[in-house]
Image 1 (tube, rainbow, N blue to C red):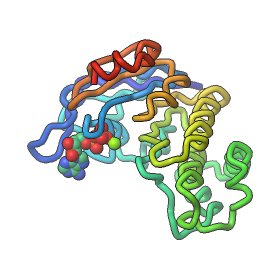
Image 2: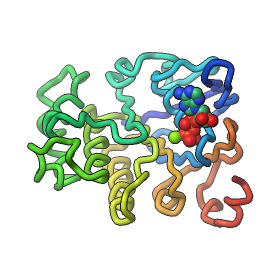
Image 3: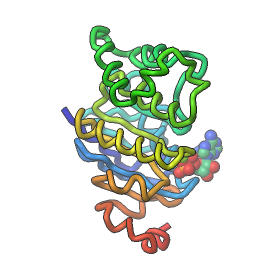
Length: 235
Ligand SMILES: Nc1ncnc2c1ncn2[C@@H]1O[C@H](COP(=O)(O)OP(=O)(O)O)[C@@H](O)[C@H]1O
Ligand SMILES: [Mg+2]
């Protein structure tokens, strides 16, 4: 049951500072859409505005056919829109298991949670091994896997990941990318992934967009972006 996301004319910023300057973006149902761009391009502001962590100044956001502009994160989560923030959204003083339990907070049908937790454990066996460990004492890579696991406790139809590979060792970057591809393939989850690691993320992407200082400067096939020279010229 895949779902699309459609953004039109999104404007967002901080006070008078406009950092997302009228962006349209279509994330097709069932796709992995990659969002690239330099530090400060407005990627985090854009995805936080989609999820309701900040209010856009203008524009509309549709999840499937439903308008969700400015709606609260809790409502979005309950509707199958999950968000993994930049810098691992885990509860550091809670165990892995308790993090996953809390991850399912908005699920009305509690009977679903044990099987979802087992799916997270089979995707990330290290989390099963460390189920009683406090999240804050785990490595960055393990915390990132847990952050993705928390998001999966709602069986989201639409998932946003903001730079999940940042600060991870190369082998873990690949593991995270493979997991993202697996979630998309096996659960049908539509995914919008923000990345700076072009090399690792391009191979799993079906579509790609590039932001530069609050505007979209590319949207389409990811393949041409593997030409490093072209991408640098664009940036
Ligand atoms: N809380 C904030 N208050 C003021 N300016 C901010 C805040 N967060 C980000 N910015 C600024 O907004 C711009 C876009 O930032 P961000 O959306 O984080 O970009 P990206 O995720 O692409 O690196 C940058 O110039 C950044 O300094
Ligand atoms: Mg960012």
